[in-house]
Image (tube, rainbow, N blue to C red; front, side):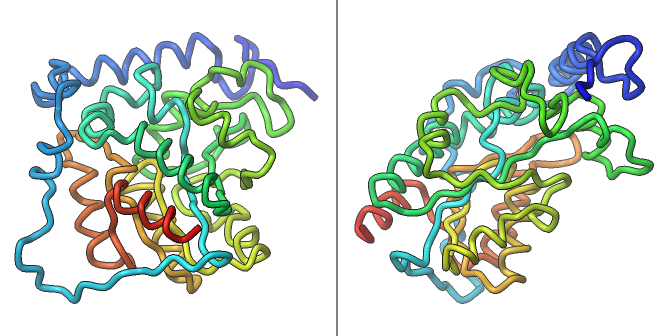
Amino acid sequence: MTHDHDKDCACGITPEYVDQARRRVLAGAATLPVAIAAGSTAQAAPDEARALYADPESPGLPQIDMEITPGRTALVVTDPQIDFLSEEGVTWGVVGESVTEQGTVDNIERLFIAAKAAGMPTFISPHYYYPHDHKWQFEGTLEKTMHSIGMFDRLGPLNLDNFEGSGADWMPQYKKYIEDGETIVCSPHKVYSPAQNDLNLQLRKRGIDKVILAGMSANLCTQAHLYDLLELGYEVAVVRDATAGAKVPEGDGYLAAIINFRMVANAVWWTNDAVERIGQSA
């Protein structure tokens, strides 16, 4: 049965509701630090971002690394979708500065290009919400936020009406890589981690035990995927500038993620390094 989001819909997620929510988030950027609201971040240089989030000169923890093994290593990208990565997305007011600083959009594309050229298996772990998800009886802070702004909303699991170009759709420049008939698009994760989707199954069925991880958002879905994959016995290298995080009064999500990446990942790479390693592994 087709679900029509209109004034009679029980879930209340009408086009008008989503538009109003989008406006609230974008307007909320005005309450954040001046650097976010003023739009000055569009000129932020990669060197400045590297300096801002530089690794310690004298690390206190052991420095380890991950070797790419052909046939056993895959690229996994979380949430490469408009709502996270486009100026038209509902979260741009809070993630836009970090996405711009890191060059996240282009860096994710560079990983797609490198993986495809090397014949490396590529997996997408997307985030979708359907009308029945809006009937949950309890939510965490950011679950409530995502639901209230219509983030990643689709009309139903079997309904692609109005999907093209929506916030749940892929970033346009990624479509030729994701929709090439080779990329594995997993079932959607619903909160942050892949605990409730089929990413682990799909990886195992392909003989994968090493993951190069990128995508959005750094301290949420990307970090949760890192933790879950580690607990499942995978080696994971995170590509630090192919992700980004929200900057809100509560804190810098990207900084929080980088700290945790350094502490738990098997490797933390820059995109340049990851692309070179992928190419050499072919």
